[in-house]
Image 1 (cartoon, rainbow, N blue to C red):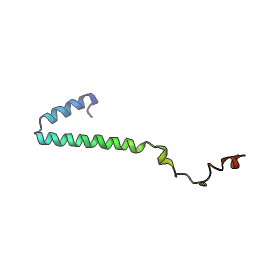
Image 2 (spheres, rainbow, N blue to C red):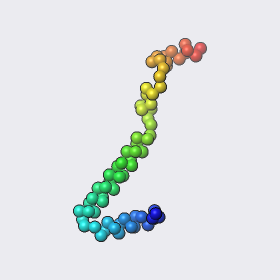
Image 3 (cartoon, rainbow, N blue to C red):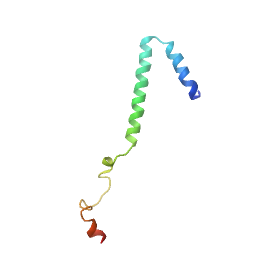
Image 4 (tube, rainbow, N blue to C red):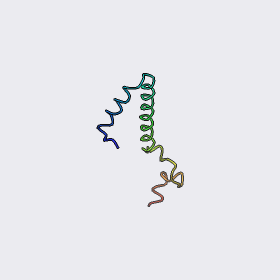
Amino acid sequence: MVPPDKLIQLINHTVEDLPYDKQQEVYDFAVYLKTKAKNVVTQNTSTLGNMIGILEGPPDLASNHDEIYD
């Protein structure tokens, strides 16, 4: 496995030797991977809106709080 600090150099040298159209493909693929990685992070973060409805209970639980716990 290539150390992280050397990997960027290896990628740059390899891509420099490719024809322009192949460089464009590499760039497009890198953008795709970056977007895909960003989407995975976004999907793994929960928001309150995503949590609504995941638990069962009476629909008026909040309005009846005092009656239930007094």
